[in-house]
Structure formats: structure tokens, C-alpha cells
Length: 144
Image 1 (cartoon, rainbow, N blue to C red):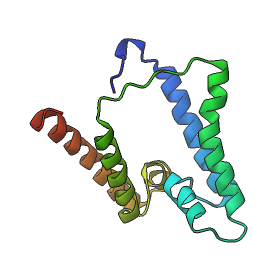
Image 2: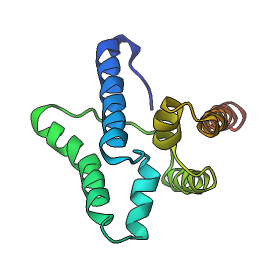
Image 3: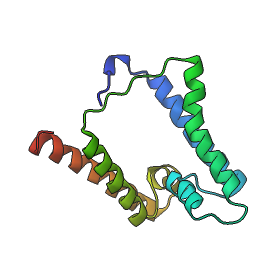
Image 4: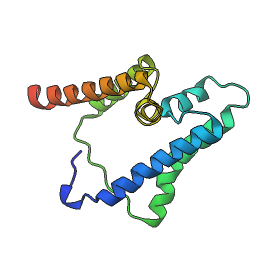
């Protein structure tokens, strides 16, 4: 994936970050729940009574929001420079890492850091470092 830096608009990036922060804050304040996607989605696979509806609504909102946005604006065309097998392997590794780390980027990186959680700080540093190292190794050592 490449970034067209000449088309980068800091105001839209800032607005998106503020919306994510407000949504995560409202979710924890109004529902007492952390807006960690892996935890929300994982809860659908091991349902607890009275817990399925809000989780399903959350996931439907995640999937439905870009669809609704696409009705009013042109969605960017993603360009991913990776083979299908590499994407599957990466997805599985992220899933395993999410389970071992007891959370994902939204749970630890957005919500956990906002709560000043030391565990979330360690988790965020660990997965960011792993991402940096992986990109360096794959691009510069293996040339992929």
C-alpha cells in the first residue's frame, strides 16, 4: 500500500482520530465496555446471554459505515502489494498475536493507552515494534 503524500490532508486525519477517540470514550462511559474489536468480535463466538445484541450491532456498524459512506462519496481503491497467501498468513499471525496479547490495536492502542494502562503500553510498543521489524525484514532482506 502506498500513501500519496501530496494528497494527504491533516485535517481529515485529525477529524478521524477525534471521532475514534470520542466513540471509544462514549462507549466506555455509556456502556462500561472497552471498544476493542477483537474482544467485541470474539464475544460473538462465545455468546453470553444479553451480550450478543450490542456486539452484533457494533460489528454491523463497523461493516456498514463504509457501505453507507460509499453511497455519498467515492471510496478510495485499495492497492495491496502482497500475494494472497501472505495476506492469509499475516491475518492468522495477527489473530494469534491478538489472543496472546489479550487485545488488539483498538483495545490496547486506543482504549488502553487512553486509560494509562501499563499493560497496554507494553502491548502497543510490542506490536508496533513487531510490525516495523516485519516490514524491514520482508522488504529489505527478502525483497518482497
